Image (cartoon, rainbow, N blue to C red; front, side, top):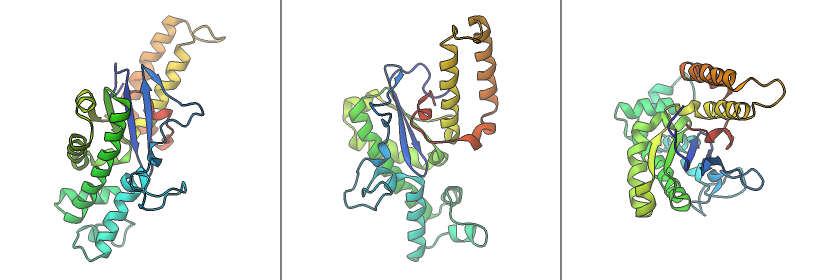
Length: 243
């Protein structure tokens, strides 16, 4: 359905307020012994960094998540930085990701610097994952993928600088075609796979009926991802199905 079709070893990095990962090895989701595999957002990148709600300091998501991006822009504005962001948000709502992206498209230096630093930290974390897992592909999804035009070049440059050459050459970095809807689409795909892989269950459809059902649901999912957005979550299980 998405950006990791026919790929057996890949990592889906979901960058929202927090950061998580779905890890697929040999075509199977890796859950870990207690189901916590993929909590990559709490890997320490800076031991003296900002405190995280998990009790640690300098976690990846505190440096590269959506909140970190917004905080960077806010600090720069409060420090007196000239920015069109202030005009975009004044009298309407608090600073948010679309405001920063829009300002960056207009050439705003505060917005672009905040996105660049966030992209650099995203790239550092992804380089670590490439070195550890040696995947075929790394897929970025979640709300930060909406800023891909600014984040992708920085992430790719950071991968060149920080990932080992052989694993880096083997790993393709892409942005999910479903972007912020990728978790939902992955959840749908996993449910479909579970149902259709057990046709012998009581009440289950015949293989032929199941095949028709799968085709119909796939077409519906492909046509209507926007209908699923309000159900979105960020579990490492739903993140991992062919974003």
